[in-house]
Image 1 (cartoon, rainbow, N blue to C red):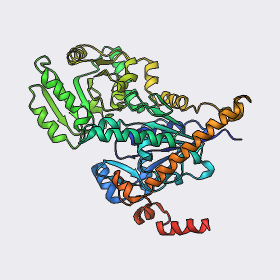
Image 2 (cartoon, helix red, strand yellow):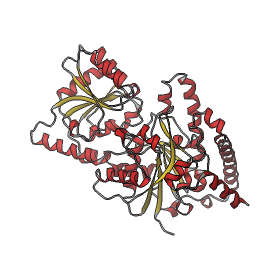
Image 3 (cartoon, rainbow, N blue to C red):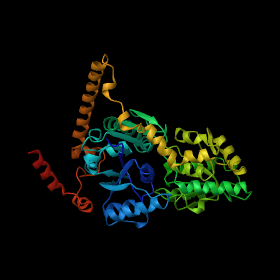
Length: 477
């Protein structure tokens, strides 16, 4: 039997939307495929033109999946030192204005042929399965790994009736991940506890950031001035992304932070309000539109301030550390991974924030060692992923039932059968509820998304819904 494994990486977003669930799964696919013993398919959402205009920035739209795939490949090839060998497939999707999220349409397990269905990596497994109506993932794939990216509970608590919604969402997330995944990887302890889960940061940084860090280290070793600017923050410009906390801290302690200059970079729904609030401070604060963190504009900053506690693992914090900067962040589970780096300074209260900020502006960052650089890389992140997902063993070494002793086998089988029966009943209930349009609508699904509409079918070359239904009926008879 061949030891070559096939990985299908499903995610909830795609470039050019510059969000973590578009970027990190793309890097994961590229680095998984770097090992020639793995065949990798990245499965990303395809949006109709109208939804593309709502989601993608700078009026970027695609007339066909081939055009979209070319854009994604060009982006990743410009950022890594090898030619990626993974394939790309698209699943039909719709954009929900209410949830500000892309949601799957129809049964997206059909994107992968049965004969190559081996390992499914579900980036945001709860998000992919809230409204899933189709084949059970664990029946189709030998191994199903969920990677939790987003602290949905923290976000919904900030909304109207947030506590009640958070309670329901906590139950729903537990339910769908239990019945559809074999293993869950939580990027940090900032996420809710889920069945069969482990906490492990399986993300790395774009190699370009590590190159900047090496350049800065060389400048410092040569006695050159490596950093010519003070402090900054970059992130989607919505209050929940740390802007509220940052402006409150700076407003309260501006008399102690005299001379501090902070630049903010971001775009989002709250940009105008953030700009107005910044103008009220006596400190020098400039608000700029969002841009790629790898832009040379950011190379000269010495201090990255990130008070956000809604992230699971903040990508920009990792990128700042990779570039050799000092990072000021809250002592929070989302920042646990970064505490191993000397340039990460965590504060427990407001007074510590002020002192750490003043100290950082007066000091030079500690040199980033080769081991620390490796820990931030996607090579190391891929190693951590394989270990956390328990995929680093050959197929033949995976545990089997027959390894259980004869004395305990009957009891083991009875317990296993009972658990399987309960899970099957739970799957049946979820499938029944997710198969009703009225239930889907009540719980926030985009209307009429049980099957892709005619436009999505035309874009992706799928059989029209009516024809597909007739084909299924014919097969059944």
